[in-house]
Every structure is written in C-alpha cells, then in structure tokens.
Length: 212
Image 1: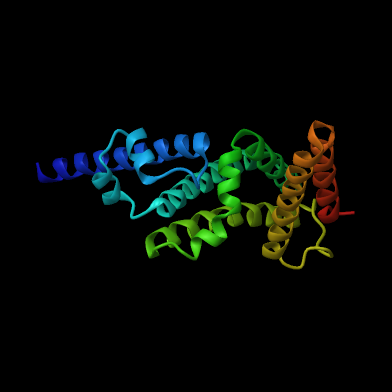
Image 2 (image 1 turned 135 degrees about the horizontal axis):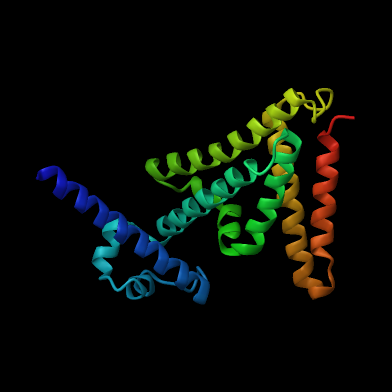
C-alpha cells in the first residue's frame, strides 16, 4: 500500500513539474523570458507562488528545465533519423536534416539549446548532470553513425581521425550556419536564401567526410 501511494505521489509530482514547464513555455513565448515573472508562470500554471518555488528555486531553473526538454526532443529526432538509413554517411545526413527540421519546427527549443552551455554553469548538480547526459546522448548517436560509416566504407578513414571530433565539427558547423541564416534573414527579410545555404552546407559537410 505504501509503495502504491509513493508511486501515485511521484506521478502527481511529475505531472505538476511538467505542468509548470508547459506554463513557462507559454509565458516565455508570449511575453519573452526577460519580461516573464515567477508570478506570471504561477498564474499560467494555476498554482500558488509558494508551490511554484517548491519545484523551482527561480526562473533560471525553470528555463534549464525547458532546456532539458529541448535536449530530449532533439535526441528523439536523432534516434528516429538514425533508423531511417542503413549506411553511416546516410545516417549522419539524416541527422543533419533532422537538426534543421528541429530548428524550423521548434524554434524556442532550438534557442534554448543555443543558450544551454551558459545555463549549465549556473545549474545545480542534478540539472547539470541531466543536461550533460542529454548532450552526451546526442554525441553518442552521431559517433555511432560515424563509426558505422568508417566500417561500411561510406566515410573516409583518411579524413576522419577521431569520430568524436568529427561529430563536434559537423554539429558545430551546421549550427553556426543556421545561426548565420537566422541573423541574415532578420536583417534582409525573406529575400535571404536561408534554406539553400543550409542545404548547401549539409552537402559540403557530407562530401567532406565521404569516402572518395
């Protein structure tokens, strides 16, 4: 009986935690992070301010919770992309496509992950470990695909000395170009050929690691 009650309480606690994050996502999207207060989030979640502080010590901790959600969402996209292709090179290309789709479909999550490194320095031990695990999962999926590409002959052993460094290079390069497109599109409007540049980048990155 005690275990049943404990499990039910844990489910209720998780449901309230998720409801707070849902409310914060809505509030941040409507008012922006800086203009949103803990009172705003409490009202949106239909909770008392005191109960909100039981779950999160401040607004930054809530934002880090959203960052964790973003990391889990991206990891799931990478896992699905990995299963759509048989060769290592095709899997990496599929992950690149899924990263671009993530940026288009979930811009708030993409923005949250862009700020994650800075936020990690301010996180408590539990959140830091969770964020590191999420980041590690993304890297593992990419490294596995690169190792497969080296084994199946679709990737160049001459160019790839370290699967880990190659994974960082690929993600960093694509992320940087997406940010560039975001900035340029903001300045020049819809006339900037963002999608063409991003797809050209993916073509170039793929060819840079492909076997001759």
